[in-house]
Amino acid sequence: MSVPSVPPLPRHEPRRADCPWCGSQRLLRRAPGRRPAVDECRDCRHTFHNPRSAAGPERGAAVRAGARLRHRSAARALFRCCPEPESWLDVGTGDADFPRTARSLFPYTSFDGLDPTHRVLRARAVERVEEAYVGRLADPHIAARLGARYDVVSMFQHLERVPDPRAELRAALHVLRPGGHLLLDVTDPRRLFALPPGPRPAGLRAELEARGCTVLTRPGSRRVVARKEPSAP
Image (cartoon, rainbow, N blue to C red; front, side):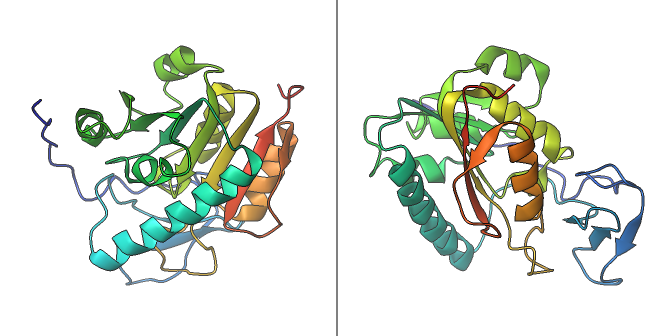
């Protein structure tokens, strides 16, 4: 089976004038002259790269090794809450490194992948995921197709990379079945120049609780596990 090639991508997207989390235009440039540039919202304290790097593969042995450690730790954390999910969607999966790692704990789970690039098609070709979707989870045609389909949805440093993280979070809950689990791994907000900075765990917790979810991880944790309650809208 031939492996799809990955087309080249631009390095950066256009600079934005508003906060991707709350929409405020009261932005503060945290470190003038630094690259990549980091802005902070004066209203909700969300930090983000502005302009954002375009979607693309992570590089560097240290980055890959750190990602593998996070993936194994996250899989174990989810296993304690939900040891036998039938279906799992990894959002922003890229080459599906997380599903490949998680299979050691979830050998009978069906893993699907979604990514804004065609890398996910390559991941399907090498059987790291069973179904592959190209686009954003918040895209109407994808959300409509995947509604209430999954027992688990995972996002690894994904909300930091999308233009509307709250819409992406709403879409993740939409494709979860009642009682399903959401697994989020976000950049530590204390690391100003982490790649990339992202939503603060407290903001994620408040958003999830407002949408009828029970957050199972401790406050302030960069890994957020939440259960979608049957009564959630």
